[in-house]
Amino acid sequence: MENAVMTLEGPGAAKKAEFEDLTLKYLDSLYGFALVLTGNSDDAHDLVQDAYLRAFRFYHRYEHIANYKAWLFTITKNLFINRYHQRAREVSLTELEIVEDDPYESPKEILVAASDRHQRGLFRQDFQRAMDSLPHKLRLAVLLKDVEGFDYKEIAEIMSCPLGTVMSRLSRGRNLLKKSLKDYWALRQPRAASANHQHAVA
Image (cartoon, rainbow, N blue to C red; front, side, top):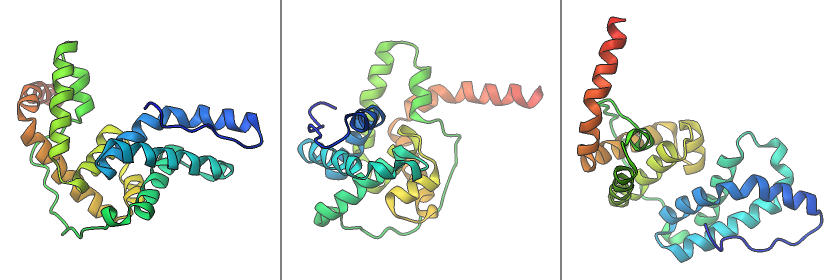
């Protein structure tokens, strides 16, 4: 993400260099997360910059943090709630029944399996359109699990909601994605079914 980081001032050039080395690699992911939260590029850039500065301010706590990436995402979410409270106000969601009617492959798995650069480019465009069409809470769950790779517990902490709510939102988001991108999943299903059959008879 370009132009997201302000020049940091303060004692300890080594500490600053260590912080930047650890943190800069996550800025693109944080920007994607912030874009989903804020809904526009300018606010997303501002939010990531604020989160970056806040993380630097409290970097001395890093040794007590089990998952640094999750900590950065949590800082970003909390700043959004505090500074963009009106737009971040929670809308209650009824717990949704978790329905896994078909085997699910993450978008990353489909992308890796794409046969060439052109096909991968088309999938990225279609996937982004499908993600943009998801309800906000469902889009966050899919982004954190299937794009960023957080586990359910980490997502629950980042989104400040129960584990069951995370699973419900993820399940519904995935099902909506499968409907939007059904052609991609249809192409993958025969291969997955064949692999399962071979495993069963082995």
